[in-house]
Length: 145
Image (cartoon, rainbow, N blue to C red; front, side):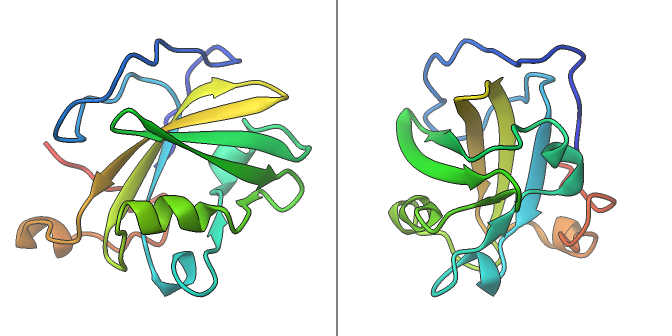
């Protein structure tokens, strides 16, 4: 699901993450996905959903992923709207596996740098959520109340 803020570039106060890695979304644009094998070893492919693509630079741009006060640099291929293979460092460092979910909140969007604040939801989601999640499309967002 993509939520779009009314002002761009999006800028935010990047003061630290919560200890548990979860926090309320700020109202800025975001997308979520449930990781599949294609997002992980050996391919490490992460294509940006169409709705978010419209907000991002069309040229290759540095992306900073932040999670729990740590950062990872990846490259966004502007034309293909996907992360380069350095995305694997974020995956490996955070021990991500198929079935885990990530929420990418767009905190800063400049022509020279894009920043996403990431939340990780481990694949051990409650059964009542798993029954309703396909994670394949924006029409089936992850909703936690």
